Length: 222
Image 1 (spheres, helix red, strand yellow):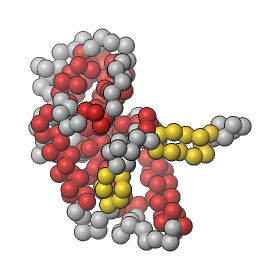
Image 2 (cartoon, rainbow, N blue to C red):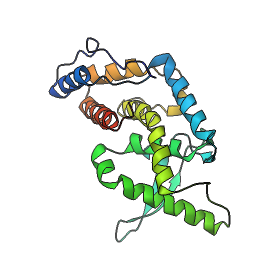
Image 3 (spheres, rainbow, N blue to C red):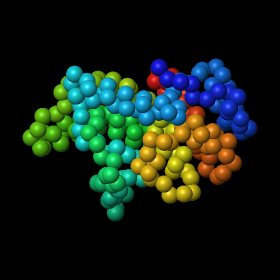
Image 4 (spheres, rainbow, N blue to C red):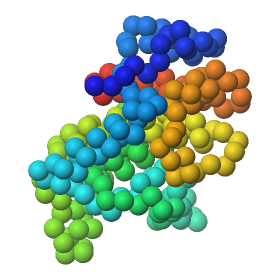
C-alpha cells in the first residue's frame, strides 16, 4: 500500500537511539508514504473516512495540536477549566477521527497513550454526545466507542505522518506554521535531517519517531 520509509543505508546516524532505529528497520520494515505520495495517501484516507456509509463529517480544525490550544486554569487548584482552539485558517469538513489522530500523535507521547487512550476516547465520546444533547441535535450515526476506536485506527496513518512532521517543525528555531508548509513537505528530508543533526532537541525528535514507529507497527498501522 505504501512505499518504504527509509533504507538502512540512508539512515547514517551514530547515537545509540539512532542505532536502535537502524536495527528496528532491519528487522521490521516500516511501511509509509514519503515525498510525492504523502498528500495522496492523506487525501485517500480522508476520502474513505468521509465517504463511509455512516458519515461522521463535521467542521474540523485541520491543524489541531498543543500550539493551537489556549487553556484557562483554576488559580487555586491548577486544574484546567476551559480550552479554546486557535488558528482556524485550516478549518475544513472532515471526519472527526482525522482531528483526533492529528492531536493525539502530534501532541502526546507513547507512555500517555498506553495508559490513557481508552479513557481519552471515552471522554471524547461522552462529551460529544452530551454537547449534541444540549444543542438538541442528533449525534453521529452509529457513534459508539467500538466504532470510534475502529475508525480512529484507520486514521492513524495520518497520525503517523503528522507525528513525524509536527515535532520536526516544533523543535526548529524558525517560526513556521503548518499551514505555511502546504503540500510540498518532504518527509524523507525532514526525517533524515532530524535524525542526523546534532542540534539540541533532535535527540527528543529521534526518540519520538522511534517510539511512534514501533507503536504503530505493532498495532498494524504501518
